Image 1 (cartoon, rainbow, N blue to C red):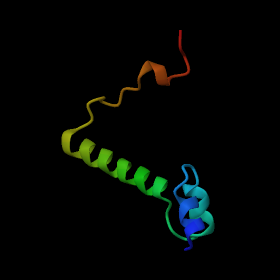
Image 2: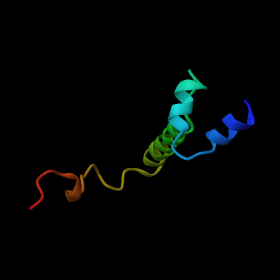
Image 3: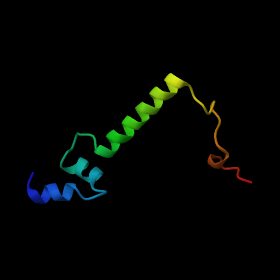
Length: 65
């Protein structure tokens, strides 16, 4: 990777584009971070239980009155 490609890789928002072109077959940093967050959340729910008890906040429902 040359200096130009390296500097382009540092620009925000180009992560998924780089993953699909230069790093084909590898997971993007954004996807890896999201996967890690999901795994940490799932581990916390399994460890501590779900404090929402399956309730959906009213702001998430379509029936807002």
